[in-house]
Amino acid sequence: MKKVVKFGGSSLASAEQFHKVGEIIHADESRRYVVPSAPGKRFDKDTKVTDMLYRCYEAAEKGESFSNHFKAIKERYEEIIHGLNLDLSLDHEFDKIEEQFKAGAGKDYAASRGEYLNGLIMANYLGYEFIDAADVIVFDENGAYDDEKTMEKLQPRLQNTDNAVIPGFYGAMENGKVKTFSRGGSDITGSIVAKAVCADLYENWTDVSGFLVSDPKIIFNPEVIETITYRELRELSYMGATVLHEEAIFPVRSMGIPINIKNTNKPEDPGTLIVESTCRQPKYTITGIAGKKGFVAINIEKDMMNSEIGFGRKVLSVFEENGISFEHIPSGIDTLSVFVHQNEFEEKEQKILAELHRAVNPDLIDLEADLALVAVVGRGMRATRGTAGRIFSALAHANVNVKMIDQGSSELNIIIGVSNRDFETAIKAIYDIFVTIQL
Ligand code: ASP
Image (tube, rainbow, N blue to C red; front, side):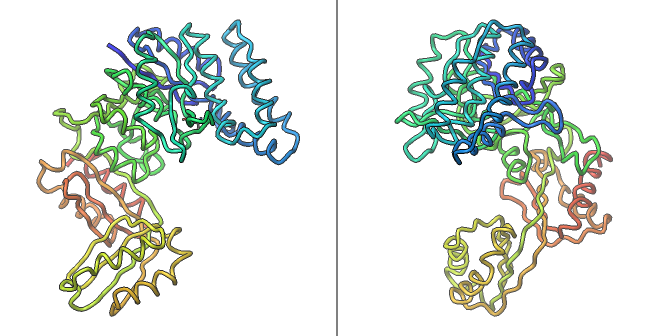
């Protein structure tokens, strides 16, 4: 049995947290490959080391003195080293980093040092081999992750290594320049390592006991999702869930490796298991509810639209040419609506409207702003009659006016458009009907 374990920033923010992590790793000898993040927040108002590094480098780049920023970063690591009683000095590393900052090594290099240094500490603490991610995670000349070249380097490197620490979040281009993933990218590194060693399980340790059925800012103490499929998660993460970086599922998914989201502070909790497919019945008909505010609908009307070949393409090409992606395009016989993010649309609004007029000569274009989209997701919906009926009667009882309905062809999700001001009420009503009351 081989497991890859990734620990997030809050799991490694202090010596005390490192202790918990050490216990977790030693409790199961199949936890052989460890991917650490940089130290995160120790308390609410604290600053993540990654943010400290960005700030420090910004000062260095402007030619300002950065010694205070640098000292504060050093202290974060020294606190951990002393708290763990390690016989380790990072002075030499810090001298090198300071030099590189002065030489303009780049923002990505700066941010990556958070994981790099934490990886050195972790390897020393566990007695595991340290593998610099810059040697094994490859980015191409455009800065995009290169999976093929990474596997060529990483697989043989890990094949003969029983236990290793590989810092998350960064790699390097072939010219040696360090490159990071987007924020939260250590999740992606963990997934890549799991793929490379063909792990049985990728454990992603964080500070919550898994994915919640809905947003705790809206629902008081929502239930944890026990098992979720990759496809369900995609539908939910796209609508705003944040526990796992949304690109982290792709490397493991291609190999059918499950991900287990676990809580470092409550290791006994089962967490959420993310799988390719499962015959485990979900606890409720729905797996999760997520949503987002801030959409605008561009409603286009034209008589005989349905018989005009190329109408949809012409409309969408206007959005494409303006660099705006659309979320949904519900349509009627003579109407077509395009849902887009309001903040992206607003600045180009008049230009897009003029171009739509020129492209399809509509009878009417009408805008409806301040809309929210709510996604109700669940593999259990396919086999259950009346799910849509229950959702809409719950919304009607809660006095929520439904503006748009879109059921994906997979029957895995139902997307509902409501007014921004009805967003929370809508989510509550749907949660109650399926989870609290369990109709
Ligand atoms: N430390 C990086 C960040 O704060 C990457 C990570 O934690 O995954 O975004």
